[in-house]
Image (cartoon, rainbow, N blue to C red; front, side, top):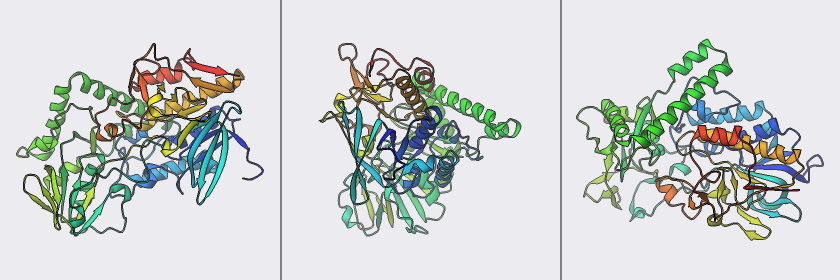
Length: 484
């Protein structure tokens, strides 16, 4: 550590992805006298967009809402490719001097709070060395999944397969799939991205799914956005486009919850128009309602086009076992493959895998309740950025960052040293943090903290409600305890 660096930072941010870069901007903008550093476990910034290298990686929501509120997305592509998003993150960090705040290869293994010193002590693995850093406020922006490995179920007899098996999270960029038979196991956002991209050069791509997912086509380029960008000043156009997309997304979600049958029929009708009258729609008709799980977006219908061209197909069945040539299904059909891609999802991991201690006692997720979706009960001077499941991740993180700056400034104004949310179990019930039926959320039941039965402990997944709660309402209430 150089002499110019503080021995104890005012704020440390964990993670240099979309959330961490956004958090740094807001703190530097609204709390300019606070000392700040970003600790990034990997060797580069960008988080998800630096980690994943699989073919066709792209956003699964529009960039006008996934992008930063303070730095407009100007590329005409509304659904953007991974390299473009990574460059946007890097450009944003450089533009606001955030890149100078990042310490790479700093993996936080443990964070311990002491009431006596009123600060956090972080145990950090820096390459092969173990070091410590201290801060007064800790902001975790490390995402929600394990960067080391994805979710890979055990497939019977997988060792017998004579070809290549690869998980998208550990994609080998040297893998050649030209003129090869490819089977992609899965039906989520990664699978529907891989299929049309690999089908461009592969002999045949088969998406093998146990059950269908709702898939909707959105234009790769937003015509309204591009028109507004031509006729209006940049910042005004960006605000209008952003709000248009927020309101459309929110309205569609609310309609899905209120009239699930009508929205289901609408989604299937739009898909059938692109797949053709004779296509068996069982492959795109889930047995759950829209938004019980996240919808998959395909830009300009690329998945449907690759299926209609016969370069790709969808098979709905279950795996019996792997064979030397591919996969034998329960139906008795064998899918031949040279390459099998296990797009089986993420492994949820809270706080980048670090442990939390408060006064020597480990903080267990089952004992923690999420306050306003930003802070944790019983954890002093601590915040976390957790995005939406039904909209762009960054929308919620942006509001969370603004709320954190309000709390920090309130503490400074009133000379408070400690801020701790206090959950009252006599007033509130406990519920799972996310009311979401996705497999990766179900598997994480013991990993995620809880939410309360009503505000301010309830996580509503609603941008309008959160905007008033986090941006415009009072920063404090009776559940937020301050100490000098």
